[in-house]
Length: 162
Length: 162
Image 1 (cartoon, each protein chain N blue to C red):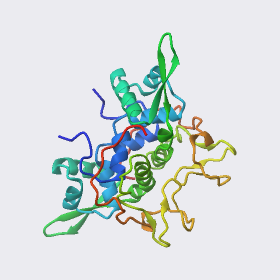
Image 2 (tube, rainbow over the protein chains, first blue to last red):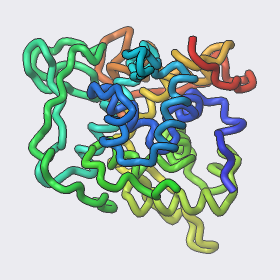
Image 3 (tube, each protein chain N blue to C red):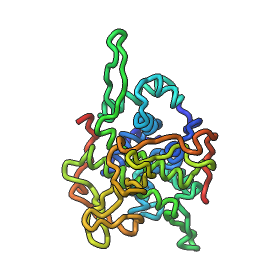
C-alpha cells in the first residue's frame, strides 16, 4: 500500500510533487495557464468527475497555487486564477511538454506550440528563452500557445523504448 | 474512480505524465541522476516496498527511460542506468527542485545544490545555464549536486499559501 505522501524524503522535488504530483493536478494547472478559469470549463476540458475536480481545485487553492475569486455575487460564482506561486510553475509545465514532444511525439506534430509573444519565435523550453531573438522567458505573459499541427489528431499511446 | 491514464488528453504534458506521473517514478529518476544504480540502493534511498519499486523500475525500463544492465553473471545481478531519453528529463527534475526550493523551502536551505562542474557556479534551473559563467547546461554531466545547507535537517511539511 502506497502512502499518501513522500514521507521521509528531504527533497525539494518530493515537496513539489506534494503540490503537483496528484493525478490531474498538473493538467488543471496547464489549463489555468491556457486561460481556463471556471469550474465548468475545467470540467469540459479535462473530462474528469466533478468531485475529483472540486477536490483538486480546493487543494490547489489551499496550497496557494490558485486563488478563488468571485466574479458574480447573485448568484455567487467563482473563478480560479493562478497566483504568483502558480505562475512560477511555468518552467515545469513547459519542460514536461517539451519532453513529451521529443520522446512521445504526436505523429502530426505537437498539439500546441509555444511562441514568444514579442517576436513570434519558438520558445526553447529547456532554456526558457526565445530561439529567434534570444530573450529570456520569465512569465507566461511573454508566451502565446496556439494550436500546433497535431491539435486535431487523435492522441497516440505512448510507445516504449525508441 | 480515477482512471489509470489521461485518456482523451491530446497533450504533450499528459503524455509525459504517463511516464513520470506515477507516484515515486520521478524520485526513482532523481536517484538515477544522483548515481544510484542498484535495486537495494534505490530501496534504501526511497524506503518504499520492494514490490512497488520493482514495478516502477520495470515500467521505466519498458518506457525506455532506464536500461537494465548485467554487472555480474554469477550470480546474475543487474543495475539500472538512465538512457538518453531518461537524461533528457534533467530540465523537468531541476525545475521541480527549483520550485520546491522557492515555494516550499527547507528553513535550513536547500537539501541539495546544483553547481556547474566547470566553474562551480550555481545552476539557474529555470534557464538551464550557469549563473556565474553563463554556459548553457544541456547534460547532467555538466552538473555536480552536493548536499546543501538543508541536507541534515528534517523535512518540513509543505505550508499552504504564503
